[in-house]
Image 1 (cartoon, rainbow, N blue to C red):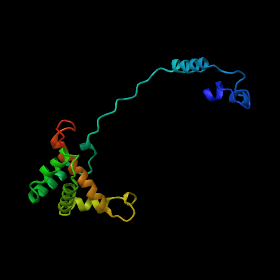
Image 2: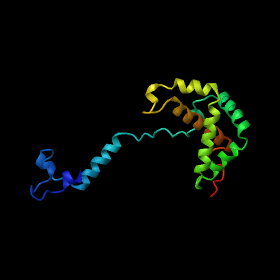
Image 3: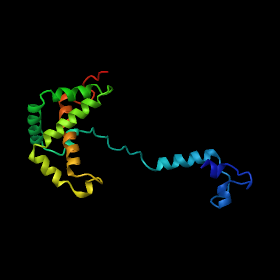
Image 4: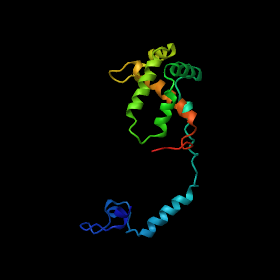
Length: 165
């Protein structure tokens, strides 16, 4: 606003607003401040809604019964899986790539044995599929995200457990 209403253009010798025919006077900064204050006084200040905390357990794709069935089968085959996942969650700044890939690979192998996983993979709509992928690509992501949220929920809310170096 200052540039158009207050500042006098060197070659025009008037403000740009006067040259454009928007106003017929050179404004002062006090005029701009008064305009803004009048605009703010007209409309009451409305506070927006508080942002709700995100609960990962509400964003799941699979039901509690399906995740519990998955965990039962997974822990039968990999008894230390939950401890390894907790380790990765508690040590986010370490080089955990090998552990993360191992956990995801084991989850994928366990999921292949469950009928509800195959049904979910086949039911994924075509528009969700990325070029060159099939339903199992997305189903693996869905089951991993749900299991990780389930295991993280065992630790408690983020910030309630100690992050270690």
